[in-house]
Image 1 (cartoon, rainbow, N blue to C red):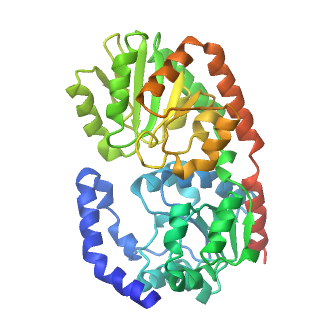
Image 2: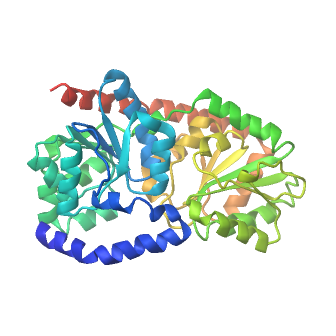
Image 3: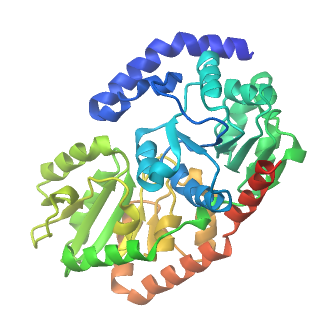
Length: 421
């Protein structure tokens, strides 16, 4: 089955390259460093590395505290972090700088995986969340590389899909030393697709161990004073296509009751910045770009954050935050960053990617879920009119985050045992 899978992958290469080129029209970074995706490197890299893989921004942000902890315990360890997306790559470079090696993860092609393994000779491989690559996993097994899946999660839908290809998945999962899942349901699903039950442990979600430096919060509060003075700031984070129009319509209705309302939009993907700006202008709304470094005026309706890596700071500048990707069927995004910063949190009905966290914060009365446009506006009005409710949400959210912390320490101890073998 794996040979058939590999053959299909090779046949798909022209289409994969065309897709990279197409995405590169709006986001030029997709055209850059494409050789890395085939493990074609123009220089020599250190070998015998500890290798971590995080797909994009969310996984990378969650991974950083773990990597930093390992660096403190093993300062001589050479660490590689791979990502799949340019935005994830940018965060690795911005946060970890020269303290780690970074390249894109190569495609799961036998020859590319061979070159990758030969180049870096990893001593340990640590994969975040749900990345299961048959050729990569088999290569780790063949070379005796201890392989871990950490912060592992698997949706019911993905589980059903994987169960249809057991001859491809089960040999790959047999190479894994440990699957450290977020929840009991995730553990059951990994076992259902072929993971050895003895190798599956529930260690929790490292996204609860989020780090928000005090200076980041202070910078955000200063933005509120310097740029947003006198405005009630409603920040919409990580928005997707067709989602901004929902909030722009809501803003124009809410403005009738909240004259000082300011909408701060933070699109998820940088290639959409100009598209969102144009959408605002088409609705005759006053827009100020973050990169313009200008104060908002009384005529400003929307502050568009056309930058990367500033979301935590912008959360700290807001009176209320809505975490996007959840008003359209995209599966939602991580709400824990906003909770950790200390801003009241709202989110929409589509939270399949963060189902357990969403259920947890709602049970703890630590966030508000909006089922549609009407509840979106009603909840925002309620939070505007009831400062005590905002304070209660913030206090409950911080308690919820603290109560669920500790996964990073558990995973770190497990990985360090392997590092000293």
